[in-house]
Image (cartoon, rainbow, N blue to C red; front, side):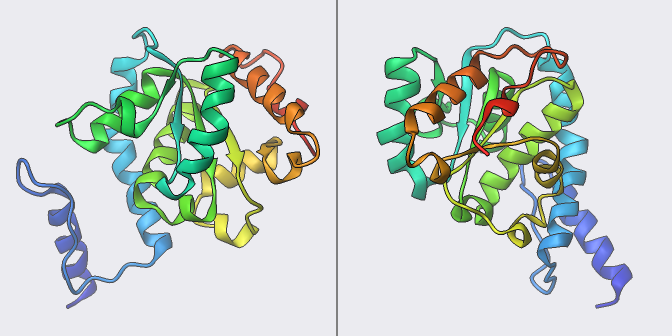
Length: 217
């Protein structure tokens, strides 16, 4: 198959027929960098326009929690009791709050734009997940589109820089500001939860003091 034929096959597969989802030709073997570029292009075409439609809608939740299902024990056992139980925030979670029967991409977009903030619980498993990648991409597009403090990154483990290479927007965020790290909070978890509370409490004004300056170094 020539390079021109591959490009045409990919374009037709991405467009698809009505009611069909994106698919790739069985002979096509893109690398992760290529897939990241395609994901960004699709997000620009289909996700960003939706943001303008939902920008003025009232927020149903304080935060959407984006996480890999392998990390659910931490989310259910640690995060929820603190944020919902003790601090009183209203959170949106996949298994509990996504609308049955609605396409997953629509559920993701509605959850992110229907929440004041998105908390991405980052782990190696998270970075390997296609759906988690879509969630952090969508949240990143909202951040850069609206220029508001709407994204919180919580790292469950230390991630080598090379594993973040496909996630260019996340790397840009990490270069500009600090993030919340669960491993570094081992000796003082109360500081971690207090900083996360401040992160959720912070308004969306880009001129307001950013919570990330208060996180653990």
